[in-house]
Image 1 (cartoon, rainbow, N blue to C red):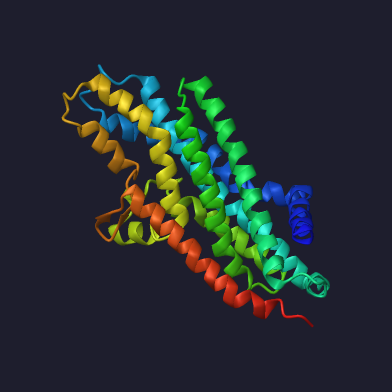
Image 2: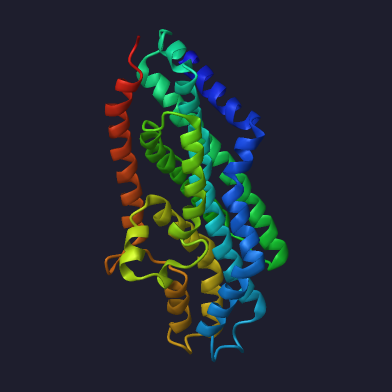
Length: 303
């Protein structure tokens, strides 16, 4: 146990001591924020105003700001949960490239412990980095538009962040087997960073895509998780606005926002409930762990 703990610590230190790795992990979330300030906020606000047409006496600018900022925060958290696990797991590739894996497998450690140490280190890194982004986002939202979350909602979101960290790590561990060099993984990281924001709906709500494209995007656990995060962040704000409207619109505004910003994941015409999404994410983790258990013993054969 102590040896595995030492390997976990070693993997964590490699990531956090490499400033460039940490920076590139956060590059996509930073781009989401910059694009939001420059372009996306106006688009989001216009979309909210269109849904709120005729309800201007009940919905003020702070309400609109709170919804737009909540969508932004969910997008940033979703992209962070993709880029950080991938960047952390590049240690696997570097260890193979530099033959460090031969030294590790020469130790008395079981192969399961070796593989598990990479998984745990990546999950912890993603949870810590995304957790910090989340707390910073909460503070900024509280200052900008007065949005605060209930303690139970904060706990739910931290739980979802942990789940997302484990989910992305388990999937990317399978992918890492196929990279033979750190250059190849870095090139893929560039593609991943470019695509992540679109796949989870951080740049453009998935409801703007065709039904087939929306369905494909929602097959990714990270997208399902981003939808769940978005729901938790926005539920209190939307319920407060709905109470102010007082049923005059028969719930049209609430339903319009859910559709406009994809608060319900849809796969081939079927709307996914929160319970279904959680079960799907857990299922993908289990399948990925089984695949890891089959594939990695072949990678870490003792020489």
